[in-house]
Image 1 (cartoon, rainbow over the protein chains, first blue to last red):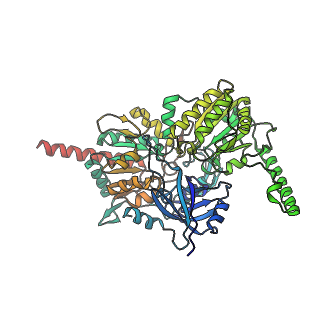
Image 2: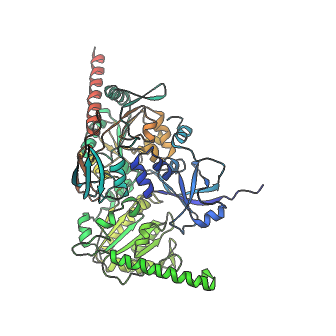
Length: 135
Length: 486
């Protein structure tokens, strides 16, 4: 079997206007969930991964692993840099280290991204249940 | 139908106060002047995701409860805890925060606001270095060079540029809007030429007119304000800029120090810094030095990346250096509409802007130790009260694990990830829509928040809910003392 491509990337988390609008519609709203369970990837990196837009990808860091939907970044070129909007999906993989000042490391985290078309993107409640056993 | 004018928008730190709302049958039906987030807030706040009845967890399930029942349960959880954490605050009124601080002192807990995971490092750095700043009005009227570093106002503060900076028409500095339109037209023409040449010769790489890593500035010669954007990605804001610097992730510190060296006329013995050619940095530094009034806005791209507070040290120092050559100010781009208010109220009441620990009976401040994420990572807290915030959606997973392991009380109008995990959920009125109050804009200007419609029946503002929890906690404590005396 051919080995799946896996890219070493730098993970950024941050705001998007879609996430901003979604959070105001309600954190349980479809708009919010759809705006934060995604990963923006450089078009060239998508080619390298051999996936098309809206395919699910798995993002893994030292701190966790999460399946999100890959979107083609409109903010390219940013080779080897992926972007997940702030939210419960991003939190699974961010670095909790606060370096003694209270601020976790939410940007610039080394991560692996690989295609995961067979794995579903979890819903909010499912994700909370899996990681925290509650909700 | 009535129209309410000059409403302050309770979404982001820009706190635009020129919103016009049309009210019909006690509902907001039309929003004028607002951005996409503002419209979403005013038109959808009353969506199906709103919690209209208090909820209490029984046998693992959240079930509806009476208001009194929820208040008593919340008070019991907080009063019985040894080291409760009280978190959130940045999306409520200053008046509610004041009660929250009283509550924290009463129970000897640790109280923290959302700045701990946004501009906490900026505050630490400002305490060390100092900050030359001003109000947004000054910038609107005078700034002729505007820098956004690690911040994408188009996404996070959509009207910031239009109201206060590049695209606002000030008394002494004119809007850059026309220049921007010219630039867009020029870029479109260039794209057409490139595409035509490509079709003719089919050799894409050789005919590109663009240089990699830096954008030739088509509007350098233009009159009026100049806009500089420094970011790791070519954001929408970057597309509007006269100069865009694409810094490599986690290299902001190097870039800031390189600018400091150039501004102080020191030679850089390298060709590029953080992936940017030094030649281009010199061009931008020239624009900085030659402006009459410059402003550097910085966002979470700087505070969250490697170096954190040290990046801010470098940014503040760069502005200090620039003030040797011209007039320059600096301001953090605050996210929540009242996060500046949270820092201000916390400081009035305790002496410290965030991460305040009352466990010894007096306020103590030591971010890294008394900050919410650290308390949770160490597993020290044994209960939590979350007000107008969603830490389950914003804290790293390891911190959330401890937060939800212990009893959790949430006061929030919406069902969010944190409320899903809570033991008590008390729904509140939306401050700035259904409740009045005070909020601080990112430049520390306090603005009144209006009550434009009535809240749903039985729903109270955060301030009132907290006041009732506090009264109940005091009653529980008095009762306990009496039992112990007897």
